[in-house]
Length: 65
Image (cartoon, rainbow, N blue to C red; front, side, top):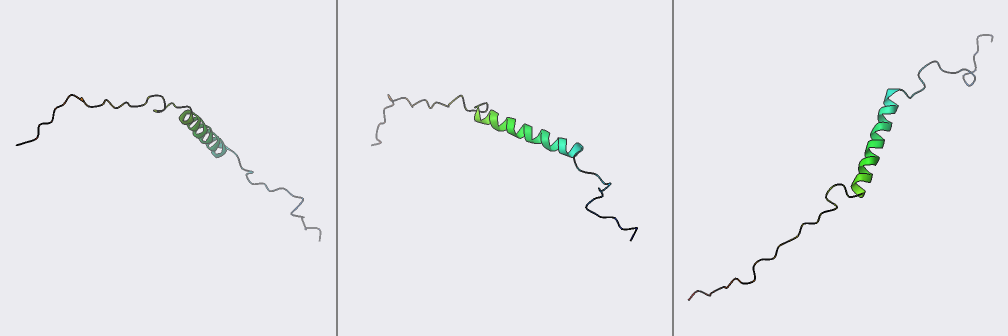
């Protein structure tokens, strides 16, 4: 019984997570949030509205005889 090790007491020796993959995920999330805020702020096409110029009303239509 001297060789028994309680698995709840010992800590694993492997990686605990984090590293470069975590930072890449954080950077992508920040970029997505900034793009969303820019879109809501009107950076892309939100400021200018296209106007339609009406046709000339002086056009005369002559019916064919």
